[in-house]
Amino acid sequence: MLTSRFERNRFVGAKIINVQSYGADIKIFEFECKLKAKPGQFIMLWLPGIGERPFSPTKTNPLELAVKKRGLFTKKMFELKVGDCVGIRGPYGKGFKYENVKHACLVAGGIGIAALVRLAETLSNNGAMVDFVYGVRKRDQLVFLERIEKVAELFVSTEDGSFGKKGTCIELLKRLLASKRYDCIYCCGPEPMMVQVLALCKHYNIKSQFSLERRMKCAVGICGHCALGSKLVCKDGPVFSGKTLASIREFMVHE
Amino acid sequence: MDLQASICGIKLKNPLVLASGVLGLNKNNLLIAQRGGAGALTIKSITLEKRSGHDTPNVAFFEAGVLNAFGYCNMGLSAALEEFADLSCFSVPIFGSCTASNARDFAKLVSAFDKLDFAAIELPVSCPHTPSYGLLAGQSNVEKVRAIIKACRKETKKPIFLKINAGLPNFVEIALAAEKAGADAITCSNTLGPGMVIDINTAKPVLSFKVGGVSGPAIRPMVVRAIYELYEHLKIPIIGLGGVSQGEHVIEMLMAGASAVGIATGILQRGPCVFRKCCEELSRWMKEHGYGSIEELIGFAHQ
Image (cartoon, rainbow over all chains, first blue to last red; front, top):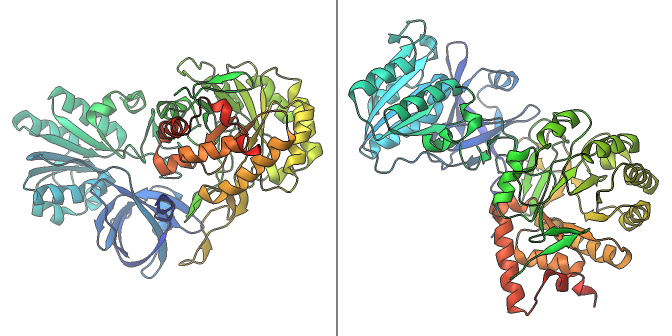
Protein backbone atom coordinates (compact mmCIF):
# COMPACT_ATOMS: atom_id res chain seq x y z
CA MET A 1 0.00 0.00 0.00
CA LEU A 2 1.48 3.31 -1.06
CA THR A 3 -0.53 5.25 1.49
CA SER A 4 1.41 3.66 4.35
CA ARG A 5 4.36 5.65 3.02
CA PHE A 6 2.68 8.69 4.47
CA GLU A 7 1.38 7.25 7.69
CA ARG A 8 4.71 5.84 8.83
CA ASN A 9 6.02 9.42 8.98
CA ARG A 10 3.58 10.50 11.67
CA PHE A 11 5.05 11.51 15.02
CA VAL A 12 4.81 9.01 17.84
CA GLY A 13 4.70 10.42 21.36
CA ALA A 14 7.85 9.75 23.40
CA LYS A 15 7.93 10.49 27.13
CA ILE A 16 11.30 11.21 28.71
CA ILE A 17 12.13 8.60 31.37
CA ASN A 18 15.72 9.51 32.22
CA VAL A 19 18.13 12.42 31.73
CA GLN A 20 21.87 12.34 32.46
CA SER A 21 24.17 15.35 32.22
CA TYR A 22 27.81 15.27 31.12
CA GLY A 23 29.51 18.55 31.84
CA ALA A 24 27.64 21.71 30.91
CA ASP A 25 26.77 20.90 27.32
CA ILE A 26 25.93 17.23 26.84
CA LYS A 27 22.81 15.44 28.01
CA ILE A 28 21.66 11.91 27.36
CA PHE A 29 17.90 11.44 27.14
CA GLU A 30 16.06 8.15 27.44
CA PHE A 31 12.52 7.90 26.08
CA GLU A 32 9.58 5.61 26.68
CA CYS A 33 9.63 4.58 23.02
CA LYS A 34 11.31 1.93 20.92
CA LEU A 35 12.08 1.74 17.26
CA LYS A 36 13.99 -0.31 14.73
CA ALA A 37 16.90 1.65 13.29
CA LYS A 38 20.18 0.49 11.79
CA PRO A 39 23.37 2.10 13.08
CA GLY A 40 23.77 5.32 11.11
CA GLN A 41 20.07 5.95 10.52
CA PHE A 42 18.48 9.00 12.13
CA ILE A 43 15.18 10.12 13.61
CA MET A 44 13.45 13.51 13.64
CA LEU A 45 12.64 14.86 17.09
CA TRP A 46 9.86 17.42 17.44
CA LEU A 47 9.58 19.89 20.29
CA PRO A 48 6.10 21.40 19.95
CA GLY A 49 6.36 25.16 19.60
CA ILE A 50 10.12 24.99 18.91
CA GLY A 51 10.76 22.87 15.82
CA GLU A 52 12.23 19.55 14.75
CA ARG A 53 15.80 18.34 14.24
CA PRO A 54 17.57 15.12 13.19
CA PHE A 55 19.34 12.95 15.78
CA SER A 56 21.19 9.62 15.73
CA PRO A 57 19.76 7.12 18.23
CA THR A 58 22.44 5.83 20.60
CA LYS A 59 20.04 3.07 21.70
CA THR A 60 16.75 1.98 20.16
CA ASN A 61 15.00 0.04 22.92
CA PRO A 62 14.29 2.20 24.75
CA LEU A 63 15.22 5.09 22.48
CA GLU A 64 18.22 7.05 23.73
CA LEU A 65 19.69 10.27 22.28
CA ALA A 66 22.90 12.11 23.12
CA VAL A 67 22.45 15.86 22.66
CA LYS A 68 25.05 18.62 22.64
CA LYS A 69 23.92 22.15 23.41
CA ARG A 70 24.56 24.17 20.25
CA GLY A 71 21.70 26.54 19.45
CA LEU A 72 18.20 27.52 20.42
CA PHE A 73 16.69 24.11 19.75
CA THR A 74 19.15 22.14 21.88
CA LYS A 75 19.01 24.85 24.55
CA LYS A 76 15.25 24.23 24.75
CA MET A 77 15.90 20.48 24.85
CA PHE A 78 18.13 21.00 27.87
CA GLU A 79 15.11 22.41 29.73
CA LEU A 80 13.20 19.12 29.30
CA LYS A 81 12.56 16.99 32.38
CA VAL A 82 11.54 13.41 33.08
CA GLY A 83 7.85 13.10 32.20
CA ASP A 84 7.93 15.64 29.34
CA CYS A 85 6.74 14.38 25.96
CA VAL A 86 8.25 14.96 22.50
CA GLY A 87 7.37 13.64 19.03
CA ILE A 88 9.57 11.19 17.14
CA ARG A 89 9.37 10.15 13.49
CA GLY A 90 11.63 7.84 11.55
CA PRO A 91 14.01 6.11 11.27
CA TYR A 92 15.27 7.73 8.08
CA GLY A 93 18.18 7.40 5.72
CA LYS A 94 20.69 4.74 4.93
CA GLY A 95 22.82 3.33 7.75
CA PHE A 96 26.41 2.10 7.80
CA LYS A 97 27.43 -0.96 5.81
CA TYR A 98 29.42 -3.36 7.95
CA GLU A 99 29.01 -6.81 6.42
CA ASN A 100 32.34 -8.58 5.77
CA VAL A 101 34.29 -6.00 7.79
CA LYS A 102 36.77 -7.83 10.05
CA HIS A 103 39.01 -4.98 11.17
CA ALA A 104 37.32 -1.62 11.66
CA CYS A 105 38.46 1.71 12.96
CA LEU A 106 35.81 4.18 14.17
CA VAL A 107 36.71 7.84 14.49
CA ALA A 108 34.40 10.10 16.49
CA GLY A 109 34.84 13.83 16.92
CA GLY A 110 32.80 15.41 19.72
CA ILE A 111 29.10 14.59 19.61
CA GLY A 112 29.77 12.58 16.43
CA ILE A 113 30.06 9.75 18.96
CA ALA A 114 26.23 9.50 18.81
CA ALA A 115 26.31 8.08 15.26
CA LEU A 116 29.09 5.56 16.02
CA VAL A 117 28.47 4.00 19.43
CA ARG A 118 25.86 1.51 18.20
CA LEU A 119 27.97 0.72 15.15
CA ALA A 120 30.87 -0.31 17.42
CA GLU A 121 28.56 -2.70 19.27
CA THR A 122 27.10 -4.11 16.07
CA LEU A 123 30.52 -4.62 14.48
CA SER A 124 31.76 -6.38 17.59
CA ASN A 125 28.66 -8.60 17.69
CA ASN A 126 29.43 -9.55 14.10
CA GLY A 127 32.89 -10.68 15.18
CA ALA A 128 34.88 -7.69 13.92
CA MET A 129 37.91 -6.28 15.72
CA VAL A 130 37.18 -2.64 16.48
CA ASP A 131 39.53 0.22 17.27
CA PHE A 132 37.74 3.34 18.45
CA VAL A 133 39.36 6.77 18.22
CA TYR A 134 37.46 9.43 20.13
CA GLY A 135 38.46 13.06 20.34
CA VAL A 136 36.84 15.84 22.37
CA ARG A 137 37.84 19.30 23.61
CA LYS A 138 37.83 18.44 27.31
CA ARG A 139 37.31 15.49 29.60
CA ASP A 140 33.71 16.20 30.69
CA GLN A 141 32.51 15.88 27.07
CA LEU A 142 33.38 12.18 26.97
CA VAL A 143 30.35 9.88 26.92
CA PHE A 144 29.73 6.12 26.50
CA LEU A 145 33.33 5.20 27.47
CA GLU A 146 32.22 2.05 29.31
CA ARG A 147 30.03 0.91 26.45
CA ILE A 148 32.82 1.41 23.94
CA GLU A 149 35.49 -0.30 26.08
CA LYS A 150 33.29 -3.41 26.23
CA VAL A 151 33.43 -3.88 22.47
CA ALA A 152 36.48 -2.01 21.19
CA GLU A 153 39.98 -0.86 21.95
CA LEU A 154 39.54 2.79 22.85
CA PHE A 155 41.95 5.64 22.07
CA VAL A 156 40.94 9.00 23.53
CA SER A 157 42.28 12.47 22.85
CA THR A 158 41.37 15.76 24.51
CA GLU A 159 42.44 19.11 23.15
CA ASP A 160 43.28 20.40 26.64
CA GLY A 161 45.01 17.18 27.69
CA SER A 162 42.59 16.58 30.59
CA PHE A 163 42.14 12.92 29.58
CA GLY A 164 43.93 10.52 27.25
CA LYS A 165 46.31 11.93 24.67
CA LYS A 166 46.57 15.69 24.40
CA GLY A 167 45.67 16.79 20.88
CA THR A 168 43.13 15.77 18.24
CA CYS A 169 41.79 12.43 17.12
CA ILE A 170 43.47 12.98 13.74
CA GLU A 171 46.87 12.61 15.39
CA LEU A 172 45.74 9.42 17.12
CA LEU A 173 44.38 8.04 13.86
CA LYS A 174 47.62 8.82 12.03
CA ARG A 175 49.57 6.86 14.63
CA LEU A 176 47.25 3.85 14.29
CA LEU A 177 47.37 3.94 10.51
CA ALA A 178 51.17 3.87 10.59
CA SER A 179 51.11 0.34 12.00
CA LYS A 180 47.64 -1.16 11.43
CA ARG A 181 45.50 -2.16 8.49
CA TYR A 182 41.72 -1.80 8.49
CA ASP A 183 39.00 -3.01 6.13
CA CYS A 184 37.02 0.14 6.74
CA ILE A 185 37.21 3.41 8.64
CA TYR A 186 33.95 4.88 9.94
CA CYS A 187 33.81 8.52 10.89
CA CYS A 188 31.45 11.13 12.31
CA GLY A 189 32.38 14.55 13.60
CA PRO A 190 32.78 18.17 12.52
CA GLU A 191 33.06 18.36 8.73
CA PRO A 192 36.60 19.79 8.58
CA MET A 193 37.73 16.83 10.68
CA MET A 194 35.93 14.40 8.37
CA VAL A 195 37.66 15.97 5.38
CA GLN A 196 41.00 15.27 7.05
CA VAL A 197 40.02 11.67 7.82
CA LEU A 198 38.94 11.19 4.20
CA ALA A 199 42.34 12.44 3.01
CA LEU A 200 44.08 9.91 5.30
CA CYS A 201 41.86 7.10 4.03
CA LYS A 202 42.76 8.02 0.47
CA HIS A 203 46.46 8.14 1.34
CA TYR A 204 46.36 4.68 2.90
CA ASN A 205 43.88 3.37 0.32
CA ILE A 206 41.35 2.27 2.96
CA LYS A 207 37.59 2.14 2.39
CA SER A 208 35.66 4.61 4.49
CA GLN A 209 32.15 5.68 5.47
CA PHE A 210 31.10 9.03 6.90
CA SER A 211 27.93 10.14 8.65
CA LEU A 212 27.02 13.68 7.60
CA GLU A 213 24.74 16.34 8.95
CA ARG A 214 22.81 19.02 7.09
CA ARG A 215 19.91 21.24 8.07
CA MET A 216 16.81 19.18 7.35
CA LYS A 217 13.23 20.25 6.87
CA CYS A 218 11.30 17.25 5.57
CA ALA A 219 13.62 14.20 6.03
CA VAL A 220 11.65 12.40 3.29
CA GLY A 221 13.52 13.56 0.18
CA ILE A 222 11.26 16.28 -1.16
CA CYS A 223 12.30 19.68 0.20
CA GLY A 224 15.91 19.62 -1.03
CA HIS A 225 17.32 21.58 1.92
CA CYS A 226 19.75 18.85 2.99
CA ALA A 227 21.26 18.51 -0.49
CA LEU A 228 24.99 17.89 -0.66
CA GLY A 229 25.76 18.50 -4.31
CA SER A 230 23.02 16.56 -5.96
CA LYS A 231 22.78 13.93 -3.23
CA LEU A 232 20.18 14.22 -0.49
CA VAL A 233 21.59 13.65 2.99
CA CYS A 234 18.18 12.46 4.25
CA LYS A 235 17.66 9.79 1.56
CA ASP A 236 21.03 9.00 -0.05
CA GLY A 237 22.80 9.46 3.29
CA PRO A 238 23.36 10.42 6.04
CA VAL A 239 26.10 7.80 5.62
CA PHE A 240 28.21 8.23 2.49
CA SER A 241 31.24 6.26 1.33
CA GLY A 242 34.52 8.12 1.12
CA LYS A 243 34.50 7.34 -2.58
CA THR A 244 31.19 9.17 -3.05
CA LEU A 245 32.24 12.14 -0.91
CA ALA A 246 35.49 12.55 -2.82
CA SER A 247 33.44 13.33 -5.92
CA ILE A 248 31.23 15.94 -4.22
CA ARG A 249 32.66 19.43 -4.41
CA GLU A 250 30.31 20.70 -1.71
CA PHE A 251 31.89 18.35 0.83
CA MET A 252 35.47 19.16 -0.04
CA VAL A 253 35.03 22.92 0.31
CA HIS A 254 36.10 22.53 3.93
CA GLU A 255 39.52 21.38 2.79
CA MET B 1 6.77 4.24 -27.18
CA ASP B 2 7.14 7.90 -28.07
CA LEU B 3 5.89 9.92 -25.08
CA GLN B 4 6.63 13.29 -26.61
CA ALA B 5 4.40 16.07 -25.37
CA SER B 6 4.24 19.79 -25.85
CA ILE B 7 3.04 22.75 -23.86
CA CYS B 8 2.83 26.24 -25.39
CA GLY B 9 5.14 25.12 -28.17
CA ILE B 10 7.75 23.79 -25.73
CA LYS B 11 8.69 20.24 -26.71
CA LEU B 12 8.92 17.74 -23.85
CA LYS B 13 10.42 14.25 -24.16
CA ASN B 14 7.61 13.10 -21.85
CA PRO B 15 4.64 14.91 -20.29
CA LEU B 16 5.93 14.71 -16.70
CA VAL B 17 7.01 17.93 -15.03
CA LEU B 18 8.76 18.39 -11.69
CA ALA B 19 6.27 20.63 -9.89
CA SER B 20 7.43 23.81 -8.20
CA GLY B 21 8.26 23.49 -4.52
CA VAL B 22 10.01 20.13 -4.40
CA LEU B 23 13.68 19.58 -5.22
CA GLY B 24 13.81 22.98 -6.89
CA LEU B 25 15.82 25.15 -4.50
CA ASN B 26 18.83 25.26 -6.80
CA LYS B 27 20.40 23.59 -9.84
CA ASN B 28 21.79 20.67 -7.85
CA ASN B 29 18.28 19.92 -6.60
CA LEU B 30 16.87 20.07 -10.14
CA LEU B 31 19.56 17.71 -11.42
CA ILE B 32 18.20 15.04 -9.04
CA ALA B 33 14.80 15.23 -10.74
CA GLN B 34 16.38 15.37 -14.19
CA ARG B 35 18.23 12.12 -13.39
CA GLY B 36 14.86 10.72 -12.30
CA GLY B 37 13.53 11.16 -15.82
CA ALA B 38 11.35 14.29 -15.66
CA GLY B 39 10.40 15.86 -19.00
CA ALA B 40 10.67 19.40 -17.60
CA LEU B 41 11.67 20.93 -14.27
CA THR B 42 10.09 23.82 -12.36
CA ILE B 43 12.20 25.75 -9.85
CA LYS B 44 10.88 26.51 -6.37
CA SER B 45 9.22 29.92 -6.41
CA ILE B 46 11.49 32.92 -6.01
CA THR B 47 10.42 36.10 -4.21
CA LEU B 48 12.03 39.55 -4.51
CA GLU B 49 13.77 39.18 -1.15
CA LYS B 50 15.32 36.09 0.40
CA ARG B 51 12.94 34.30 2.79
CA SER B 52 13.70 31.77 5.49
CA GLY B 53 10.09 30.57 5.52
CA HIS B 54 8.19 29.02 8.41
CA ASP B 55 9.88 27.16 11.28
CA THR B 56 9.95 23.36 11.31
CA PRO B 57 7.89 21.18 11.28
CA ASN B 58 7.16 22.19 7.68
CA VAL B 59 5.54 18.88 6.79
CA ALA B 60 2.84 16.82 8.47
CA PHE B 61 1.63 13.43 7.32
CA PHE B 62 -1.69 11.63 7.27
CA GLU B 63 -2.80 8.35 5.75
CA ALA B 64 -3.66 9.80 2.33
CA GLY B 65 -1.02 12.46 1.84
CA VAL B 66 1.00 15.33 3.21
CA LEU B 67 0.44 18.84 4.49
CA ASN B 68 3.21 21.35 3.97
CA ALA B 69 3.86 24.88 5.06
CA PHE B 70 7.36 25.89 4.00
CA GLY B 71 6.33 29.51 3.60
CA TYR B 72 8.23 30.25 0.37
CA CYS B 73 11.70 29.79 1.83
CA ASN B 74 13.96 30.74 -1.10
CA MET B 75 17.22 32.51 -1.94
CA GLY B 76 15.58 35.70 -3.26
CA LEU B 77 15.79 37.24 -6.72
CA SER B 78 19.40 38.46 -6.85
CA ALA B 79 20.84 35.09 -5.76
CA ALA B 80 18.44 33.28 -8.09
CA LEU B 81 19.63 35.32 -11.08
CA GLU B 82 23.13 34.05 -10.38
CA GLU B 83 22.13 30.47 -9.59
CA PHE B 84 20.03 30.07 -12.73
CA ALA B 85 22.16 32.23 -15.08
CA ASP B 86 23.64 29.17 -16.79
CA LEU B 87 21.22 26.32 -17.44
CA SER B 88 23.49 24.41 -19.81
CA CYS B 89 23.71 21.41 -17.44
CA PHE B 90 20.09 20.57 -18.22
CA SER B 91 18.84 18.49 -21.11
CA VAL B 92 15.16 19.28 -20.44
CA PRO B 93 13.29 22.62 -20.35
CA ILE B 94 13.45 24.55 -17.07
CA PHE B 95 10.42 26.54 -15.96
CA GLY B 96 11.06 29.57 -13.76
CA SER B 97 8.63 30.23 -10.93
CA CYS B 98 8.23 33.45 -9.01
CA THR B 99 5.67 34.91 -6.66
CA ALA B 100 4.86 38.22 -5.04
CA SER B 101 2.28 40.06 -3.00
CA ASN B 102 1.13 42.38 -5.79
CA ALA B 103 1.14 42.86 -9.56
CA ARG B 104 4.01 45.37 -9.54
CA ASP B 105 6.38 42.98 -7.73
CA PHE B 106 5.27 40.08 -9.92
CA ALA B 107 6.20 42.19 -12.96
CA LYS B 108 9.64 43.01 -11.52
CA LEU B 109 10.36 39.31 -11.04
CA VAL B 110 9.10 38.36 -14.49
CA SER B 111 11.14 41.12 -16.08
CA ALA B 112 14.27 39.74 -14.39
CA PHE B 113 13.40 36.11 -15.26
CA ASP B 114 12.82 37.09 -18.88
CA LYS B 115 16.59 37.50 -19.31
CA LEU B 116 17.31 33.93 -18.17
CA ASP B 117 16.99 30.77 -20.27
CA PHE B 118 13.78 29.59 -18.66
CA ALA B 119 11.46 28.01 -21.23
CA ALA B 120 8.44 29.45 -19.44
CA ILE B 121 7.56 31.33 -16.27
CA GLU B 122 5.03 30.00 -13.79
CA LEU B 123 3.22 32.39 -11.47
CA PRO B 124 1.56 30.87 -8.42
CA VAL B 125 -1.31 32.96 -7.05
CA SER B 126 -2.64 30.08 -4.99
CA CYS B 127 -0.43 29.17 -2.02
CA PRO B 128 -2.75 28.53 0.94
CA HIS B 129 -0.23 28.98 3.78
CA THR B 130 2.04 32.02 3.36
CA PRO B 131 0.96 35.42 4.75
CA SER B 132 1.08 38.18 2.10
CA TYR B 133 1.27 35.64 -0.75
CA GLY B 134 -1.23 33.66 -2.79
CA LEU B 135 -4.57 33.06 -1.12
CA LEU B 136 -3.42 34.96 1.99
CA ALA B 137 -2.82 38.02 -0.22
CA GLY B 138 -6.33 37.76 -1.62
CA GLN B 139 -5.10 36.44 -4.96
CA SER B 140 -8.25 34.36 -5.25
CA ASN B 141 -9.78 37.61 -6.46
CA VAL B 142 -10.32 37.65 -10.24
CA GLU B 143 -9.40 41.34 -10.56
CA LYS B 144 -6.10 40.83 -8.76
CA VAL B 145 -5.21 37.88 -10.99
CA ARG B 146 -6.10 39.89 -14.10
CA ALA B 147 -3.86 42.74 -12.93
CA ILE B 148 -0.98 40.34 -12.21
CA ILE B 149 -1.15 38.68 -15.65
CA LYS B 150 -1.52 42.01 -17.44
CA ALA B 151 1.50 43.47 -15.65
CA CYS B 152 3.63 40.38 -16.29
CA ARG B 153 2.54 40.00 -19.91
CA LYS B 154 4.21 43.35 -20.69
CA GLU B 155 7.55 42.08 -19.33
CA THR B 156 8.05 38.88 -21.29
CA LYS B 157 7.30 37.02 -24.47
CA LYS B 158 8.01 33.71 -22.73
CA PRO B 159 4.98 31.53 -22.04
CA ILE B 160 3.32 32.44 -18.72
CA PHE B 161 1.73 29.66 -16.68
CA LEU B 162 -0.71 30.69 -13.97
CA LYS B 163 -0.81 28.26 -11.04
CA ILE B 164 -4.27 28.27 -9.53
CA ASN B 165 -6.00 26.55 -6.62
CA ALA B 166 -8.64 23.98 -7.54
CA GLY B 167 -10.18 24.32 -4.09
CA LEU B 168 -11.57 27.79 -4.83
CA PRO B 169 -15.22 28.09 -5.87
CA ASN B 170 -14.22 30.55 -8.63
CA PHE B 171 -11.25 28.69 -10.11
CA VAL B 172 -12.79 28.57 -13.61
CA GLU B 173 -13.46 32.29 -13.52
CA ILE B 174 -9.85 32.95 -12.44
CA ALA B 175 -8.47 30.77 -15.23
CA LEU B 176 -10.70 32.43 -17.84
CA ALA B 177 -9.67 35.91 -16.71
CA ALA B 178 -6.00 34.87 -16.86
CA GLU B 179 -6.46 33.46 -20.37
CA LYS B 180 -8.07 36.68 -21.52
CA ALA B 181 -5.31 38.77 -19.91
CA GLY B 182 -2.62 36.84 -21.78
CA ALA B 183 -1.67 33.77 -19.75
CA ASP B 184 -0.45 30.89 -21.94
CA ALA B 185 -1.30 27.93 -19.71
CA ILE B 186 -2.96 27.08 -16.40
CA THR B 187 -1.26 24.88 -13.80
CA CYS B 188 -3.95 23.17 -11.76
CA SER B 189 -3.54 22.81 -8.85
CA ASN B 190 -1.54 24.18 -5.98
CA THR B 191 -1.98 22.32 -2.67
CA LEU B 192 -5.55 22.43 -1.42
CA GLY B 193 -6.93 23.64 1.87
CA PRO B 194 -5.23 24.66 4.03
CA GLY B 195 -5.72 21.73 6.36
CA MET B 196 -4.49 20.87 9.82
CA VAL B 197 -3.06 17.77 11.51
CA ILE B 198 -3.16 17.64 15.31
CA ASP B 199 -0.78 15.40 17.23
CA ILE B 200 -3.03 13.82 19.84
CA ASN B 201 -0.18 12.95 22.22
CA THR B 202 0.81 16.57 22.73
CA ALA B 203 -2.55 18.06 21.69
CA LYS B 204 -0.73 20.47 19.34
CA PRO B 205 -1.03 21.13 15.59
CA VAL B 206 2.01 19.45 14.01
CA LEU B 207 2.94 22.24 11.58
CA SER B 208 4.67 25.24 13.13
CA PHE B 209 2.38 27.42 11.02
CA LYS B 210 -0.50 25.25 12.29
CA VAL B 211 -2.10 24.96 8.82
CA GLY B 212 -0.64 23.78 5.53
CA GLY B 213 -1.49 22.95 1.94
CA VAL B 214 -2.77 19.41 1.37
CA SER B 215 -1.17 17.25 -1.32
CA GLY B 216 -0.99 13.60 -2.30
CA PRO B 217 -3.56 10.91 -3.19
CA ALA B 218 -6.29 12.58 -1.14
CA ILE B 219 -6.58 15.55 -3.50
CA ARG B 220 -6.34 13.80 -6.88
CA PRO B 221 -10.10 13.42 -7.50
CA MET B 222 -10.68 17.11 -6.78
CA VAL B 223 -7.90 18.11 -9.14
CA VAL B 224 -9.07 15.74 -11.90
CA ARG B 225 -12.53 17.26 -11.69
CA ALA B 226 -11.08 20.78 -11.85
CA ILE B 227 -8.97 19.93 -14.91
CA TYR B 228 -12.04 18.37 -16.57
CA GLU B 229 -14.00 21.54 -15.98
CA LEU B 230 -11.18 23.87 -17.09
CA TYR B 231 -10.78 21.88 -20.30
CA GLU B 232 -14.42 22.59 -21.17
CA HIS B 233 -13.90 26.35 -20.79
CA LEU B 234 -10.30 27.15 -21.79
CA LYS B 235 -8.50 27.40 -25.10
CA ILE B 236 -5.04 27.48 -23.48
CA PRO B 237 -3.43 24.22 -22.26
CA ILE B 238 -3.49 22.86 -18.73
CA ILE B 239 -0.72 21.34 -16.62
CA GLY B 240 -2.39 18.87 -14.27
CA LEU B 241 -0.88 18.58 -10.80
CA GLY B 242 -2.06 16.88 -7.63
CA GLY B 243 -1.61 13.38 -6.22
CA VAL B 244 0.05 11.77 -9.23
CA SER B 245 2.47 8.96 -8.47
CA GLN B 246 1.64 6.25 -11.04
CA GLY B 247 1.29 5.96 -14.78
CA GLU B 248 -2.46 5.41 -14.45
CA HIS B 249 -2.81 8.73 -12.64
CA VAL B 250 -0.99 10.47 -15.49
CA ILE B 251 -3.41 8.92 -18.00
CA GLU B 252 -6.36 10.04 -15.89
CA MET B 253 -5.12 13.65 -15.87
CA LEU B 254 -4.40 13.61 -19.60
CA MET B 255 -7.88 12.25 -20.29
CA ALA B 256 -9.36 14.97 -18.08
CA GLY B 257 -7.67 17.52 -20.33
CA ALA B 258 -4.12 18.14 -19.12
CA SER B 259 -1.38 18.52 -21.74
CA ALA B 260 1.38 17.87 -19.20
CA VAL B 261 1.33 16.48 -15.68
CA GLY B 262 3.26 17.65 -12.61
CA ILE B 263 4.61 15.47 -9.83
CA ALA B 264 5.62 16.61 -6.34
CA THR B 265 4.46 14.43 -3.44
CA GLY B 266 4.89 11.38 -5.71
CA ILE B 267 8.64 11.80 -5.16
CA LEU B 268 8.11 11.00 -1.49
CA GLN B 269 6.26 7.81 -2.44
CA ARG B 270 8.59 6.44 -5.11
CA GLY B 271 11.76 8.55 -5.05
CA PRO B 272 13.05 10.91 -7.77
CA CYS B 273 12.78 8.07 -10.32
CA VAL B 274 8.97 8.34 -9.99
CA PHE B 275 9.16 10.15 -13.35
CA ARG B 276 10.85 7.24 -15.11
CA LYS B 277 8.55 4.71 -13.43
CA CYS B 278 5.45 6.67 -14.49
CA CYS B 279 6.76 6.86 -18.06
CA GLU B 280 7.28 3.11 -18.16
CA GLU B 281 3.77 2.50 -16.83
CA LEU B 282 2.34 5.06 -19.23
CA SER B 283 4.13 3.46 -22.21
CA ARG B 284 2.99 -0.03 -21.28
CA TRP B 285 -0.62 1.06 -20.84
CA MET B 286 -0.69 3.00 -24.11
CA LYS B 287 0.76 0.05 -26.00
CA GLU B 288 -1.74 -2.38 -24.44
CA HIS B 289 -4.64 -0.09 -25.24
CA GLY B 290 -3.60 0.91 -28.73
CA TYR B 291 -2.67 4.56 -28.20
CA GLY B 292 0.14 5.90 -30.36
CA SER B 293 0.79 9.30 -28.79
CA ILE B 294 0.19 11.44 -25.72
CA GLU B 295 -1.81 13.81 -27.94
CA GLU B 296 -4.52 11.17 -28.45
CA LEU B 297 -5.11 10.95 -24.68
CA ILE B 298 -5.52 14.65 -23.97
CA GLY B 299 -9.14 15.41 -23.19
CA PHE B 300 -10.22 11.92 -24.22
CA ALA B 301 -12.70 11.74 -21.32
CA HIS B 302 -14.73 14.55 -22.93
CA GLN B 303 -15.94 12.51 -25.90
